Picture: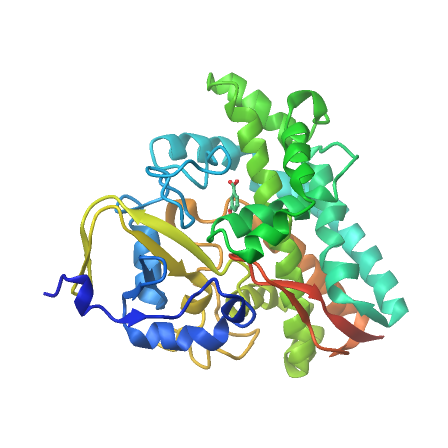
Length: 399
Ligand code: OVM
């Protein structure tokens, strides 16, 4: 058994450098091939990029804990830059309580009720875009559809909703180092943080929405009253920029792989699979950290207690040790085991929301379009955590 850090594969690669963030998939192979555990000297953190190790770490939430932050900062040593999330940045037993409370609100029943309204909105939006023939699938579709359905579901105040994406961009950047990408996302956007704090207050939430339901559930459970706005904040942080880019990547995949879109057209019921595979292929949440709560051995390497471990979810989802032809988007493949929504107790609370949005968009293009063609280079928006698209010109021919 080896235990010394000096025996570890050490990479000088910087996963938060702009060059890396602009094309992370180009670097994942080197990370995976260097070893099951690697040391990233620049940040003094361990990293895992292979599927099995990423999944195993996510499964072992006691050893690889979340309460010390899921970004580079260790909350036991550094002040978090916002009050920690009561879901994302907690461990059991608290996490079990908050997750259960939120899970009752984001329920199968709630989604079943939303589906007809969301479907109608998807149908109208896609119809108007297909009529235009040429549009930007990032700004005219991916950034539009989640905003048409999600804020109303929460019961968010109307004024200032455009701040949601700015806020999420800052928070997702905040999981990385205080580099230029982070700093630039803050410039002129400080009011997005204040807006979100306002929007989470009980008096600013509309009756009947998931936001107010959180307040009622926190009261009913006898939890501290300051939990409610912080739990509503989780909806606002995790619910928009994620699905925006999920839909963006779905469209990129369908445009890049016409033969796969043809399969979807032939059978629109493949819409759920198409979205799932797009999440595996181009995972929006690229990475999350965990912190070790004790010494742990991974494949012969001892990771000491208190270490930050960077888990490359997107790399795991393209690990050739796990997937055949991992770089190919294939809608018929069983992609269900991907870790794009994470794995284990922290696995995405909103995954059914995301899947519903993605499925509805995929199904509408399957029904309404004959072809989707990429009509220009996709433009990337660099983020320390998210794989994001700011522009995706497409040409769509209707039926
Ligand atoms: C939260 C939160 C924030 C960012 C991401 C996320 C992917 C959750 O505030 O709970 O999940």
